[in-house]
Image 1 (cartoon, rainbow, N blue to C red):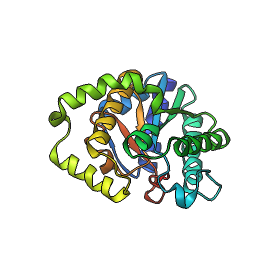
Image 2: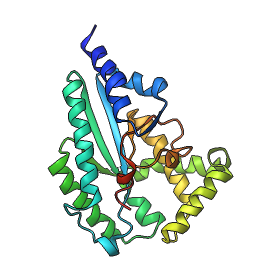
Image 3: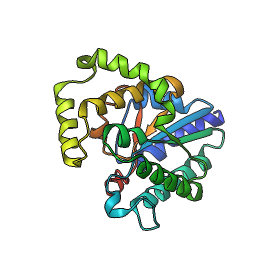
Length: 229
């Protein structure tokens, strides 16, 4: 059996069943085929810190962000050890525009938080690159227009109600419509450009519908969900 086939078999029979905290999305249809490629792209969206007035802007050793990064570093170590024939590329997508444009956070607050996140990534997960969503802003605009023009076909009443409830709970005055437009535009762009596998840091139900046909894995335990919150 080829070395790459052995690596995928290990992922399928050992790593995934032992580590999953939620059922994967499009596992057979997209995840396994993408794992068979010589280069595998993982990506993890990461939000800005919304409770910065309480926790500050700098991430410290005792914060949940550090615990999550250490947890993910453990997963990456297993992948590198057992899939040596694969080139593993992983990036965190810093959702800066969600904080500033949609939820009204000060730009300097968002910027300083992601600077702190980048510093900790270099310490704990140096293989992972942090890329801000704002770097895709111009390219994403065509996708936003497409979603707005056909809003009802992408976003149903139940999804909008869920987003509205979340926005009210956050008390940031964010626009749930624009949040959903942004999420779907993000998925369209990332899927087209990279064909990645998303390794999510939130509960599976929070990704449902907005992530459409993006393949997703769930390994992060509930206690570590959404560390930026």
